[in-house]
Each structure stands twice: as C-alpha cells, then as structure tokens.
Length: 125
Image (cartoon, rainbow, N blue to C red; front, side, top):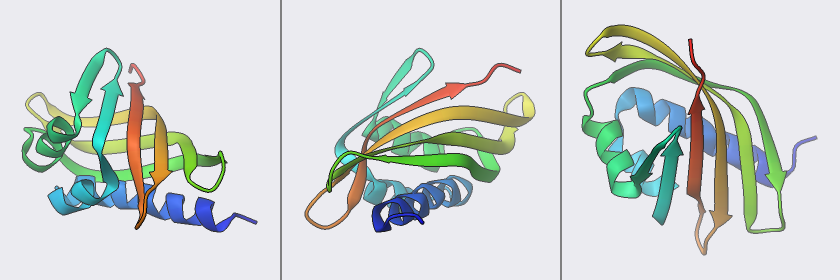
C-alpha cells in the first residue's frame, strides 16, 4: 500500500498535468518552491521562466498525463518522484505529442510539499 506521502505526491504531480492544460499560473505558483530550478535536456529555466512558459507560452497543451510514477522517500520532508509525462498540444509547427522522462525533487515546508528541482528529458521521436 502507498504511504500517505506517496499518495500526496502523486496527487500533486497530477495537479501539475491539470495545470498545464488549464494554463493555471496559480497551480504552479503553489507547487514550485521559491528557488525552484528546472532542466529540460540542455535548457535551464528558473521558477519565473517556467511559470511564464506555462501560463503565456506559445505552445498550447490540450492533454497531459503521468505514467509509471514511483515515489522515492528520503525521510519525512524529502522525496523524489520519477515517471513519464505525456503531453499533447499544438505549437508553431502544428500538433505534437511529447514524451518526457521526469525526475521531480520535493521538499515538505511548514505548510505544504513543493518541488525544488525538476528535470525532464524529451524522448526523441
């Protein structure tokens, strides 16, 4: 059976995918820690960069889902979630489906869990 931490982090990871589709700035402001850092392949982005891209970027996400998530717990306040993120949408060059292998590092603060670092690898077509 999943631990309460694992259940909560899977729920939060699924909020991330829903936030992508809705372009929901508030969701990402809640989930991403103040010093959040993101890497995708060779690109490095800050918290502000990610929130801007999600809320106002050129690509429109029409569907997103997680698969194969595994929660790796490291004590009561730190965990890493690995899995697959599949994103469908439309960009400047037309419709797309992107498949990412992800690693998200979560830290539990005084009031909630937040992602402090995320790394996505876009699987080549």
